[in-house]
Image (tube, chains in turn green, cyan, red, orange):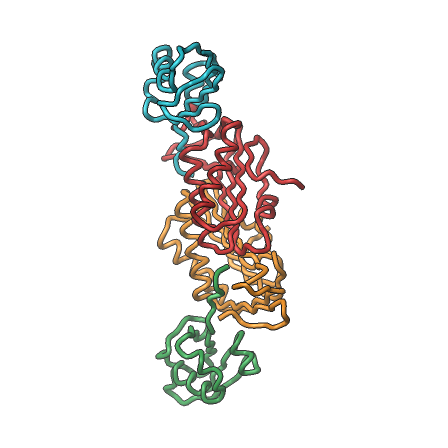
Length: 83
Length: 83
Length: 138
Length: 138
Protein backbone atom coordinates (compact mmCIF):
# COMPACT_ATOMS: atom_id res chain seq x y z
CA UNK A 1 0.00 0.00 0.00
CA UNK A 2 1.18 3.49 -0.73
CA UNK A 3 0.99 5.82 2.26
CA UNK A 4 1.75 9.53 2.27
CA UNK A 5 3.49 10.81 5.41
CA UNK A 6 3.59 14.47 6.41
CA UNK A 7 6.46 15.78 8.54
CA UNK A 8 6.34 18.89 10.67
CA UNK A 9 8.62 20.95 12.87
CA UNK A 10 11.45 18.89 14.38
CA UNK A 11 10.48 15.85 12.33
CA UNK A 12 10.80 17.75 9.08
CA UNK A 13 14.25 18.93 10.12
CA UNK A 14 15.33 15.32 10.79
CA UNK A 15 13.78 13.82 7.67
CA UNK A 16 14.70 16.73 5.43
CA UNK A 17 11.31 16.70 3.71
CA UNK A 18 7.79 17.91 4.46
CA UNK A 19 6.22 14.87 2.80
CA UNK A 20 7.27 11.40 1.67
CA UNK A 21 5.54 8.32 0.29
CA UNK A 22 6.13 4.89 1.79
CA UNK A 23 5.20 1.39 0.61
CA UNK A 24 3.86 -0.73 3.46
CA UNK A 25 2.42 -4.25 3.57
CA UNK A 26 -1.29 -4.94 3.80
CA UNK A 27 -2.20 -5.03 7.48
CA UNK A 28 0.25 -2.29 8.38
CA UNK A 29 -0.77 0.05 11.19
CA UNK A 30 0.29 3.51 12.28
CA UNK A 31 2.64 1.77 14.71
CA UNK A 32 4.36 -0.43 12.13
CA UNK A 33 4.83 2.60 9.86
CA UNK A 34 6.43 4.52 12.72
CA UNK A 35 8.86 1.62 13.26
CA UNK A 36 9.82 1.77 9.59
CA UNK A 37 10.51 5.50 9.95
CA UNK A 38 12.60 5.08 13.09
CA UNK A 39 14.78 2.52 11.33
CA UNK A 40 15.34 4.88 8.43
CA UNK A 41 15.74 8.04 10.58
CA UNK A 42 17.15 6.92 13.93
CA UNK A 43 16.94 10.44 15.38
CA UNK A 44 13.15 10.08 15.33
CA UNK A 45 13.44 7.40 18.04
CA UNK A 46 13.51 10.02 20.77
CA UNK A 47 9.93 10.94 19.87
CA UNK A 48 8.52 7.45 20.46
CA UNK A 49 5.83 7.64 23.12
CA UNK A 50 5.65 11.45 22.92
CA UNK A 51 3.62 11.67 19.72
CA UNK A 52 0.09 12.14 18.58
CA UNK A 53 -0.99 10.28 15.46
CA UNK A 54 -3.30 11.34 12.66
CA UNK A 55 -4.67 9.39 9.71
CA UNK A 56 -6.39 11.51 7.09
CA UNK A 57 -6.38 14.47 9.47
CA UNK A 58 -8.14 12.56 12.24
CA UNK A 59 -6.51 11.66 15.54
CA UNK A 60 -5.65 7.97 15.53
CA UNK A 61 -3.76 5.40 17.57
CA UNK A 62 -0.72 3.18 17.04
CA UNK A 63 -3.15 0.30 16.40
CA UNK A 64 -5.07 2.12 13.66
CA UNK A 65 -4.86 0.08 10.43
CA UNK A 66 -3.76 1.83 7.28
CA UNK A 67 -5.36 1.73 3.82
CA UNK A 68 -4.06 2.51 0.36
CA UNK A 69 -3.65 6.25 -0.17
CA UNK A 70 -3.92 7.27 3.51
CA UNK A 71 -2.22 10.43 4.67
CA UNK A 72 -0.44 9.87 7.98
CA UNK A 73 1.03 12.51 10.27
CA UNK A 74 3.18 11.89 13.30
CA UNK A 75 2.59 14.94 15.42
CA UNK A 76 5.57 15.94 17.53
CA UNK A 77 4.78 17.44 20.93
CA UNK A 78 2.84 20.64 20.53
CA UNK A 79 2.88 21.75 24.15
CA UNK A 80 4.21 25.15 23.35
CA UNK A 81 5.08 25.58 26.98
CA UNK A 82 3.22 28.30 28.73
CA UNK A 83 2.21 31.38 26.85
CA UNK B 1 -20.98 67.08 64.27
CA UNK B 2 -22.00 67.76 60.72
CA UNK B 3 -21.85 64.69 58.50
CA UNK B 4 -22.46 64.60 54.75
CA UNK B 5 -24.29 61.49 53.51
CA UNK B 6 -24.31 60.40 49.87
CA UNK B 7 -27.21 58.36 48.51
CA UNK B 8 -27.07 56.13 45.47
CA UNK B 9 -29.35 53.96 43.37
CA UNK B 10 -32.31 52.63 45.37
CA UNK B 11 -31.38 54.75 48.38
CA UNK B 12 -31.49 57.94 46.38
CA UNK B 13 -34.94 57.00 45.11
CA UNK B 14 -36.16 56.48 48.69
CA UNK B 15 -34.55 59.58 50.16
CA UNK B 16 -35.24 61.76 47.16
CA UNK B 17 -31.81 63.35 47.26
CA UNK B 18 -28.28 62.41 46.23
CA UNK B 19 -26.77 64.09 49.25
CA UNK B 20 -27.88 65.37 52.65
CA UNK B 21 -26.22 66.77 55.76
CA UNK B 22 -26.99 65.40 59.21
CA UNK B 23 -26.17 66.65 62.70
CA UNK B 24 -25.03 63.81 64.96
CA UNK B 25 -23.73 63.74 68.52
CA UNK B 26 -20.07 63.38 69.35
CA UNK B 27 -19.32 59.67 69.58
CA UNK B 28 -21.69 58.79 66.76
CA UNK B 29 -20.70 55.86 64.56
CA UNK B 30 -21.66 54.72 61.10
CA UNK B 31 -24.17 52.44 62.80
CA UNK B 32 -25.86 55.17 64.86
CA UNK B 33 -26.13 57.34 61.75
CA UNK B 34 -27.79 54.50 59.88
CA UNK B 35 -30.34 54.14 62.68
CA UNK B 36 -31.13 57.85 62.37
CA UNK B 37 -31.69 57.41 58.65
CA UNK B 38 -33.93 54.39 59.07
CA UNK B 39 -36.14 56.30 61.50
CA UNK B 40 -36.47 59.17 59.04
CA UNK B 41 -36.84 56.93 55.94
CA UNK B 42 -38.44 53.66 57.09
CA UNK B 43 -38.16 52.13 53.61
CA UNK B 44 -34.39 52.02 54.13
CA UNK B 45 -34.89 49.41 56.87
CA UNK B 46 -34.96 46.61 54.31
CA UNK B 47 -31.33 47.32 53.50
CA UNK B 48 -30.08 46.78 57.07
CA UNK B 49 -27.48 44.02 57.05
CA UNK B 50 -27.18 44.08 53.26
CA UNK B 51 -24.99 47.19 53.03
CA UNK B 52 -21.41 48.16 52.68
CA UNK B 53 -20.28 51.30 54.50
CA UNK B 54 -17.80 53.97 53.45
CA UNK B 55 -16.39 56.92 55.35
CA UNK B 56 -14.48 59.41 53.24
CA UNK B 57 -14.47 56.92 50.34
CA UNK B 58 -12.90 54.12 52.41
CA UNK B 59 -14.71 50.93 53.32
CA UNK B 60 -15.70 51.09 56.98
CA UNK B 61 -17.79 49.22 59.52
CA UNK B 62 -20.86 49.93 61.60
CA UNK B 63 -18.53 50.56 64.55
CA UNK B 64 -16.43 53.16 62.73
CA UNK B 65 -16.56 56.46 64.68
CA UNK B 66 -17.47 59.60 62.79
CA UNK B 67 -15.75 62.97 62.86
CA UNK B 68 -16.86 66.46 61.94
CA UNK B 69 -17.11 66.90 58.17
CA UNK B 70 -16.94 63.20 57.28
CA UNK B 71 -18.57 62.00 54.07
CA UNK B 72 -20.50 58.80 54.66
CA UNK B 73 -21.97 56.50 52.03
CA UNK B 74 -24.27 53.57 52.66
CA UNK B 75 -23.68 51.34 49.70
CA UNK B 76 -26.69 49.32 48.62
CA UNK B 77 -25.99 45.85 47.27
CA UNK B 78 -23.91 46.07 44.12
CA UNK B 79 -24.04 42.41 43.13
CA UNK B 80 -25.25 43.16 39.65
CA UNK B 81 -26.22 39.55 39.29
CA UNK B 82 -24.31 37.64 36.74
CA UNK B 83 -23.08 39.36 33.65
CA UNK C 1 -1.66 58.42 24.11
CA UNK C 2 -1.76 58.45 27.91
CA UNK C 3 -3.91 55.60 29.17
CA UNK C 4 -5.62 55.74 32.55
CA UNK C 5 -5.81 52.15 33.75
CA UNK C 6 -8.80 52.63 36.09
CA UNK C 7 -11.65 54.70 34.77
CA UNK C 8 -15.38 55.28 35.35
CA UNK C 9 -16.82 57.19 32.44
CA UNK C 10 -19.88 57.83 30.32
CA UNK C 11 -17.80 57.35 27.19
CA UNK C 12 -17.94 54.10 25.18
CA UNK C 13 -15.09 51.74 26.06
CA UNK C 14 -12.53 51.02 23.35
CA UNK C 15 -10.73 47.75 24.13
CA UNK C 16 -7.73 48.11 21.80
CA UNK C 17 -5.90 50.88 23.69
CA UNK C 18 -6.34 49.03 26.99
CA UNK C 19 -5.06 45.76 25.59
CA UNK C 20 -2.09 47.63 24.13
CA UNK C 21 -1.50 49.35 27.47
CA UNK C 22 -1.29 46.13 29.52
CA UNK C 23 0.97 44.36 27.02
CA UNK C 24 4.66 44.48 27.93
CA UNK C 25 7.41 42.39 26.30
CA UNK C 26 7.70 39.99 29.23
CA UNK C 27 4.03 39.02 29.32
CA UNK C 28 2.81 36.28 26.99
CA UNK C 29 -0.84 36.23 28.03
CA UNK C 30 -3.56 38.84 28.03
CA UNK C 31 -7.07 38.00 29.24
CA UNK C 32 -9.87 40.44 28.52
CA UNK C 33 -13.30 40.28 30.09
CA UNK C 34 -16.03 42.23 28.33
CA UNK C 35 -19.31 42.68 30.16
CA UNK C 36 -22.05 43.38 27.66
CA UNK C 37 -25.63 44.54 28.14
CA UNK C 38 -27.89 41.54 27.58
CA UNK C 39 -31.39 41.59 26.16
CA UNK C 40 -32.97 39.82 29.12
CA UNK C 41 -32.61 38.92 32.76
CA UNK C 42 -34.35 35.86 34.19
CA UNK C 43 -36.85 35.62 31.33
CA UNK C 44 -37.77 39.31 31.43
CA UNK C 45 -36.92 41.41 28.37
CA UNK C 46 -34.60 44.36 28.91
CA UNK C 47 -34.94 47.64 27.03
CA UNK C 48 -31.73 49.30 28.26
CA UNK C 49 -29.63 49.72 31.40
CA UNK C 50 -28.55 52.71 33.44
CA UNK C 51 -25.32 52.40 35.44
CA UNK C 52 -24.50 54.74 38.27
CA UNK C 53 -21.29 54.96 40.32
CA UNK C 54 -19.83 56.68 43.34
CA UNK C 55 -16.90 57.69 41.20
CA UNK C 56 -14.60 59.26 43.81
CA UNK C 57 -14.69 55.89 45.57
CA UNK C 58 -15.15 53.48 42.68
CA UNK C 59 -11.90 54.37 40.91
CA UNK C 60 -9.72 53.72 44.00
CA UNK C 61 -11.70 50.51 44.64
CA UNK C 62 -10.95 49.26 41.12
CA UNK C 63 -7.26 50.03 41.68
CA UNK C 64 -7.27 48.20 45.01
CA UNK C 65 -8.96 45.13 43.47
CA UNK C 66 -6.12 44.96 40.95
CA UNK C 67 -3.69 45.04 43.90
CA UNK C 68 -5.61 42.24 45.61
CA UNK C 69 -5.21 40.15 42.46
CA UNK C 70 -1.53 41.00 42.26
CA UNK C 71 -1.01 39.65 45.79
CA UNK C 72 -2.53 36.34 44.71
CA UNK C 73 -1.10 35.72 41.23
CA UNK C 74 2.03 36.77 39.32
CA UNK C 75 0.50 39.24 36.93
CA UNK C 76 1.62 42.27 34.98
CA UNK C 77 -0.46 45.28 34.17
CA UNK C 78 -4.19 45.54 34.80
CA UNK C 79 -6.78 47.94 33.40
CA UNK C 80 -10.46 48.25 34.29
CA UNK C 81 -12.88 50.64 32.61
CA UNK C 82 -16.51 50.81 33.66
CA UNK C 83 -19.17 52.80 31.91
CA UNK C 84 -21.97 54.72 33.59
CA UNK C 85 -25.10 56.31 32.22
CA UNK C 86 -27.52 54.77 29.77
CA UNK C 87 -26.31 51.70 27.88
CA UNK C 88 -28.10 49.96 25.05
CA UNK C 89 -28.21 46.20 24.50
CA UNK C 90 -24.90 44.99 23.09
CA UNK C 91 -22.87 47.87 24.50
CA UNK C 92 -19.89 47.20 26.74
CA UNK C 93 -20.48 48.06 30.38
CA UNK C 94 -17.15 46.92 31.80
CA UNK C 95 -13.78 45.84 30.48
CA UNK C 96 -11.19 44.06 32.65
CA UNK C 97 -7.81 43.42 31.04
CA UNK C 98 -4.99 41.51 32.74
CA UNK C 99 -1.55 40.67 31.36
CA UNK C 100 0.72 38.02 32.84
CA UNK C 101 3.75 35.97 31.89
CA UNK C 102 1.58 32.82 31.91
CA UNK C 103 -2.02 32.36 30.99
CA UNK C 104 -3.43 30.64 34.07
CA UNK C 105 -2.59 33.61 36.29
CA UNK C 106 -4.15 35.99 33.77
CA UNK C 107 -7.40 33.99 33.64
CA UNK C 108 -7.63 33.63 37.42
CA UNK C 109 -6.84 37.27 38.11
CA UNK C 110 -9.29 38.62 35.52
CA UNK C 111 -12.13 36.49 36.88
CA UNK C 112 -11.22 37.38 40.46
CA UNK C 113 -11.24 41.11 39.71
CA UNK C 114 -14.60 40.85 37.96
CA UNK C 115 -16.08 38.84 40.84
CA UNK C 116 -14.83 41.41 43.32
CA UNK C 117 -16.20 44.30 41.26
CA UNK C 118 -19.62 42.67 41.55
CA UNK C 119 -19.16 42.30 45.30
CA UNK C 120 -17.80 45.65 46.42
CA UNK C 121 -17.34 48.27 43.71
CA UNK C 122 -19.84 51.09 44.31
CA UNK C 123 -21.45 50.82 40.89
CA UNK C 124 -25.15 50.12 40.48
CA UNK C 125 -27.26 48.92 37.63
CA UNK C 126 -30.83 49.93 36.92
CA UNK C 127 -32.70 47.60 34.65
CA UNK C 128 -35.19 49.32 32.36
CA UNK C 129 -37.52 46.57 31.27
CA UNK C 130 -39.13 46.30 27.88
CA UNK C 131 -42.54 46.66 29.61
CA UNK C 132 -41.59 50.16 30.80
CA UNK C 133 -40.82 49.42 34.45
CA UNK C 134 -37.44 50.08 36.01
CA UNK C 135 -35.68 48.47 38.98
CA UNK C 136 -32.28 48.62 40.61
CA UNK C 137 -30.51 45.29 40.53
CA UNK C 138 -29.82 44.62 44.23
CA UNK D 1 -18.07 41.14 6.67
CA UNK D 2 -18.13 37.35 6.76
CA UNK D 3 -16.15 36.08 9.75
CA UNK D 4 -14.58 32.63 9.79
CA UNK D 5 -14.57 31.54 13.41
CA UNK D 6 -11.67 29.06 13.11
CA UNK D 7 -8.68 30.22 11.13
CA UNK D 8 -4.97 29.46 10.72
CA UNK D 9 -3.33 32.26 8.78
CA UNK D 10 -0.16 34.24 8.22
CA UNK D 11 -2.15 37.46 8.53
CA UNK D 12 -2.05 39.57 11.70
CA UNK D 13 -5.02 38.87 13.96
CA UNK D 14 -7.50 41.70 14.50
CA UNK D 15 -9.47 41.09 17.73
CA UNK D 16 -12.34 43.53 17.19
CA UNK D 17 -14.13 41.62 14.39
CA UNK D 18 -13.91 38.36 16.35
CA UNK D 19 -15.25 39.91 19.53
CA UNK D 20 -18.09 41.43 17.49
CA UNK D 21 -18.73 38.06 15.85
CA UNK D 22 -19.15 36.12 19.12
CA UNK D 23 -21.40 38.75 20.71
CA UNK D 24 -25.10 38.02 20.47
CA UNK D 25 -27.86 39.82 22.40
CA UNK D 26 -28.37 36.98 24.87
CA UNK D 27 -24.74 36.76 26.00
CA UNK D 28 -23.54 39.12 28.71
CA UNK D 29 -19.95 37.94 28.93
CA UNK D 30 -17.12 37.76 26.43
CA UNK D 31 -13.71 36.43 27.45
CA UNK D 32 -10.78 36.96 25.12
CA UNK D 33 -7.42 35.27 25.47
CA UNK D 34 -4.56 36.85 23.58
CA UNK D 35 -1.34 34.86 23.31
CA UNK D 36 1.53 37.26 22.65
CA UNK D 37 5.13 36.60 21.65
CA UNK D 38 7.29 37.17 24.73
CA UNK D 39 10.84 38.46 24.78
CA UNK D 40 12.23 35.49 26.70
CA UNK D 41 11.70 31.88 27.68
CA UNK D 42 13.24 30.48 30.86
CA UNK D 43 15.84 33.26 31.12
CA UNK D 44 16.90 33.02 27.48
CA UNK D 45 16.26 36.03 25.27
CA UNK D 46 14.04 35.49 22.23
CA UNK D 47 14.59 37.27 18.91
CA UNK D 48 11.40 36.11 17.17
CA UNK D 49 9.20 33.03 16.74
CA UNK D 50 8.15 30.94 13.78
CA UNK D 51 4.85 29.10 14.01
CA UNK D 52 4.00 26.21 11.73
CA UNK D 53 0.74 24.29 11.43
CA UNK D 54 -0.76 21.26 9.74
CA UNK D 55 -3.57 23.50 8.56
CA UNK D 56 -5.92 20.92 6.97
CA UNK D 57 -6.03 19.25 10.38
CA UNK D 58 -5.55 22.20 12.72
CA UNK D 59 -8.68 24.07 11.65
CA UNK D 60 -11.00 21.09 12.31
CA UNK D 61 -9.20 20.48 15.60
CA UNK D 62 -9.86 24.05 16.72
CA UNK D 63 -13.51 23.62 15.82
CA UNK D 64 -13.73 20.33 17.74
CA UNK D 65 -12.11 21.91 20.83
CA UNK D 66 -14.84 24.54 20.81
CA UNK D 67 -17.38 21.69 20.72
CA UNK D 68 -15.64 19.99 23.65
CA UNK D 69 -15.99 23.22 25.62
CA UNK D 70 -19.64 23.55 24.62
CA UNK D 71 -20.36 20.10 26.04
CA UNK D 72 -18.91 21.20 29.39
CA UNK D 73 -20.23 24.77 29.83
CA UNK D 74 -23.24 26.75 28.61
CA UNK D 75 -21.52 29.02 26.13
CA UNK D 76 -22.44 30.91 23.01
CA UNK D 77 -20.22 31.55 20.04
CA UNK D 78 -16.51 30.76 19.96
CA UNK D 79 -13.77 31.99 17.64
CA UNK D 80 -10.11 30.92 17.50
CA UNK D 81 -7.55 32.45 15.18
CA UNK D 82 -3.94 31.25 15.18
CA UNK D 83 -1.14 32.84 13.25
CA UNK D 84 1.67 30.99 11.51
CA UNK D 85 4.92 32.19 10.00
CA UNK D 86 7.38 34.58 11.57
CA UNK D 87 6.11 36.62 14.53
CA UNK D 88 7.93 39.43 16.27
CA UNK D 89 7.91 40.10 20.00
CA UNK D 90 4.61 41.66 21.04
CA UNK D 91 2.66 40.24 18.10
CA UNK D 92 -0.44 38.15 18.73
CA UNK D 93 0.04 34.45 18.00
CA UNK D 94 -3.38 33.21 19.05
CA UNK D 95 -6.75 34.68 19.94
CA UNK D 96 -9.48 32.68 21.68
CA UNK D 97 -12.83 34.44 22.13
CA UNK D 98 -15.79 32.91 23.97
CA UNK D 99 -19.19 34.45 24.63
CA UNK D 100 -21.62 33.15 27.22
CA UNK D 101 -24.70 34.28 29.12
CA UNK D 102 -22.64 34.27 32.35
CA UNK D 103 -19.03 35.06 32.93
CA UNK D 104 -17.81 31.98 34.80
CA UNK D 105 -18.62 29.71 31.87
CA UNK D 106 -16.88 32.08 29.48
CA UNK D 107 -13.70 32.14 31.61
CA UNK D 108 -13.65 28.38 32.07
CA UNK D 109 -14.31 27.60 28.43
CA UNK D 110 -11.71 30.05 27.11
CA UNK D 111 -9.01 28.64 29.39
CA UNK D 112 -10.02 25.07 28.57
CA UNK D 113 -9.84 25.70 24.83
CA UNK D 114 -6.43 27.34 25.17
CA UNK D 115 -5.12 24.46 27.32
CA UNK D 116 -6.38 21.95 24.77
CA UNK D 117 -4.81 23.86 21.88
CA UNK D 118 -1.50 23.50 23.68
CA UNK D 119 -2.10 19.78 24.13
CA UNK D 120 -3.37 18.62 20.77
CA UNK D 121 -3.62 21.25 18.05
CA UNK D 122 -1.04 20.46 15.36
CA UNK D 123 0.69 23.83 15.60
CA UNK D 124 4.38 24.12 16.44
CA UNK D 125 6.56 26.94 17.64
CA UNK D 126 10.18 27.46 16.76
CA UNK D 127 12.05 29.75 19.11
CA UNK D 128 14.69 31.88 17.41
CA UNK D 129 16.95 32.97 20.23
CA UNK D 130 18.68 36.30 20.46
CA UNK D 131 22.03 34.44 20.29
CA UNK D 132 21.19 33.17 16.78
CA UNK D 133 20.23 29.57 17.61
CA UNK D 134 16.82 28.12 16.86
CA UNK D 135 14.89 25.28 18.48
CA UNK D 136 11.43 23.76 18.25
CA UNK D 137 9.53 24.01 21.50
CA UNK D 138 8.69 20.38 22.25
